[in-house]
Amino acid sequence: MPSPSVENVVIIGTGCAGLTAAIYTARANLNPLVLEGPLPGGQLTTTSEVENFPGFPQGIDGFQLMQNLREQATRFGARFEQALITTVDFTSMPRKLIAADRVVLAKSVIIATGASPRMTGVPGEKELYGGKGVTTCATCDGAFYRKMDVAVIGGGDSAAEEALFLTRFASKVYLVHRRNELRASKIMADRATSHEKIVCVWDSVPVAVEGVEQGAVSGLRIRHVKSGVESVLPVKGVFVAIGHLPNTQPFVPPLDVDENGYFKPLPGSQIQTKVPGVYVAGDCADHVYRQAITAAGMGCAAAIEAERWLAEHGS
Ligand code: NAP
Image 1 (cartoon, rainbow, N blue to C red):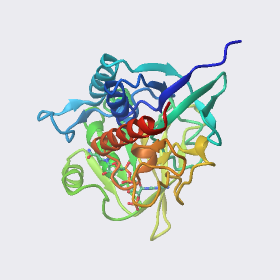
Image 2 (cartoon, rainbow, N blue to C red):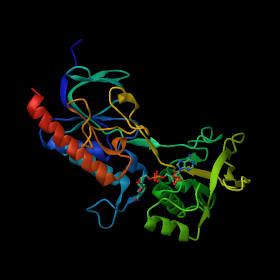
Image 3 (cartoon, rainbow, N blue to C red):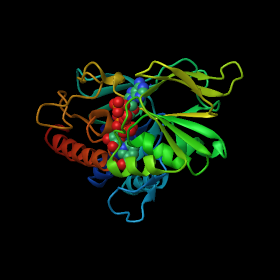
Image 4 (cartoon, rainbow, N blue to C red):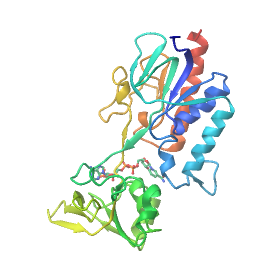
């Protein structure tokens, strides 16, 4: 069996960071191989309108934005393949990226694996996830809840955005938050709290999603954190929007992560890891900004660093 060829640069992930790295490395004639995981296009494909990506004064659909980035990378010669990397061997050159059915060899690597939605872990959530009333994506599933009451859990920008999006379909949207003010940016918080269809349920945490026996959500049991009183919101849909967990597990060790699991780059750098020629970019390495544009910026920086590193060490 012929041994696999050694790639100049392999980019893991096809969100904003990965695709921007693909555009830059492809345009630098490095012939990058981009490995696509379980959510091609990344988190923005589950968003509706993106209003804050520079260059789109009227906003742009999240899925369309990712399609555009992909087309741009393909135009310069980036190659895309499906592969879920489960572990790596960075002890020698070339670097080894190991998937269930193959090993990919690379001189340099850009890890842009993003983050996945965090779940509350309350009883009923897992059982009723996916088509049974519990979801993490209003854009994907909101239209199924026409003229119904739904609940959104969380207090950040995602929760505010999900709640506002759901007002297009639902009769009433309960926004359940564990504190008495939203963490979301002022503009989003103001829009959500002043919307006539959104009912803010403050100081409350989910206790259970009800309806497991029937196989469909029939309510969300919540507890008021100050009084301890439990009640049930009579909803048909529960949208979990409590943040994300970085997809860094396959690379740890050898790479370092912080207490929340985000990649910890070398001091003074956002993207450089302790392994020469291996870079990180986007939400897997950024728990502070987590924006499409900052992820794209990190992807760009990682691509330029990889290009420089290959020029010096790549032959
Ligand atoms: P986030 O800002 O981390 O907010 C997570 C929310 O969930 C917080 O309100 C948190 O409560 C709550 N929470 C966390 N764990 C919980 C649990 N176990 N049970 C109940 N509630 C829990 O996450 P995000 O909203 O996904 O936003 C992530 C980043 O993306 C932010 O930087 C945000 O600005 C950005 N973003 C921007 C836009 C936009 O500009 N249009 C849209 C979406 C996201 P506490 O408040 O008490 O911590």
